[in-house]
Length: 348
Image (cartoon, rainbow, N blue to C red):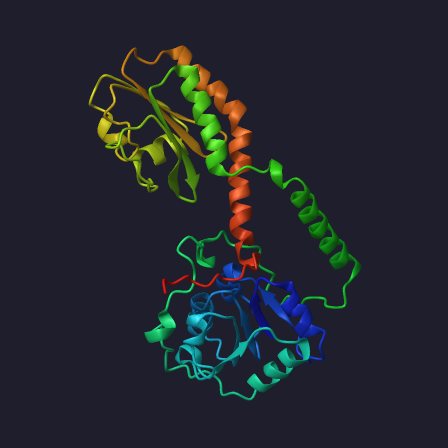
């Protein structure tokens, strides 16, 4: 039985409620790697549990495209997008069924056994790709999709979870619980990227006496403006792609740039907002993935000021690295929030 979910409780419920099947649990970000494994088993049934219907259907389609034709059971939640899916053959896949949550362990096992009686997915007919009402958006605009996340560790092909709870498995689970508790106890000491970037940028601006400043922080291959100070309404800072000169030369290669009253290098600063200023200094904040851009009218930036930024990078680097780690952790834990949607308030 292949279970695609982030919740270990689901695999435990299936394995501990009388099911005769071995349970192979794969997290959604690791599904592609599991499917391409050299010796992956052929599941007799698939269970998909993801918070958003578009993600669940995308997982179903990915399985079908990879040749997995086993009957599939999709655990569905509340909301209009879930309600728009058919209970039988959601997404146009005749070998799939919806099972509304919440559900008890025995009922879940019974539903899985019932799904085993469904026909296998035809290999010649592709399921409908989010057409019609099923395409209704359900994820909030600021909610990261699981496709945007960094790949999670993938169990090796054929890995079977030891549901009897061996000593090593119990010790690992205890370590995870202890780490979560320690983090919750110290959550007031965890700072995000915008907070940390604002502190670092204010210090950089003070050390060199800049009129305006921007701090860009790496987010995957892109570089996002995390903090800005002193910019005019016309000076816009963009999210820089990896192909931009600042991202590839300053951020990745950790090289600096000083522009002294010349237009020769200004086109390379497109998107950072301060390229039109008279004197501009661009420097990496190694070892963190960050770049600071400082500008002023006069005088030109000196070697001593450049050195002061190098010292600042060494001091502030750990703060920015910790903030980036906190951002990655927050995104990874986003599906576990278990927050009920608030009803929309309509006039009248």
